[in-house]
Length: 254
Ligand SMILES: [Ca+2]
Ligand SMILES: [Ca+2]
Ligand SMILES: [Ca+2]
Ligand SMILES: [Ca+2]
Image (cartoon, rainbow, N blue to C red):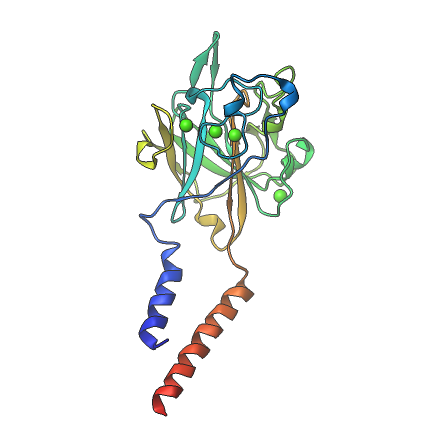
């Protein structure tokens, strides 16, 4: 390795945080079809192999309810789906809406512990109609949640939490506007697509985190994950690059 290669290597590290190269950060939401349920017509959508063309087990299975991916472009987060984030979706005389985005910093997120904000540290509190959002610290213990219809008899309470309605502390300087597009450029399956972005996650810079979102009925939920190398790992990598460069320089002198 020479100094030119070293420079390219460091530029490569910086590239991961650059704009213009959206990365799919979606991870499996951990639910899967159980053969004993016996429904063979919809089970193709109740898989755990992909988030696209997948909804939660026993929920209505089609593109209108499909949450497809969390995309991260630099610090800008977007959600892509067959579900219409901006307008919601009408079905059976009810109106269904997309939920807030929840952020977990320490791996203890869950769908049951409402008293501890389900283990989440932040909520992106989104007003889809107005196209605005706030970042809310929800570790204060006085946060109120709306569960929508994510409960019995629908067997989808695993999709919680849906959204916050009150409490928490808004992070000054991190509120913003939601941008909408048709999301078709990402190539997910299904005829119709929607995208809601760009949410600035700059307040999480340098941190690893997990994401969660769902719909008011819990018909589909989606998780995402970003893993940032520990500072110790990065300095070790830097040191080894530098020592390699030093080694090459020494050899050139021989
Ligand atoms: Ca799809
Ligand atoms: Ca899905
Ligand atoms: Ca947590
Ligand atoms: Ca899902």
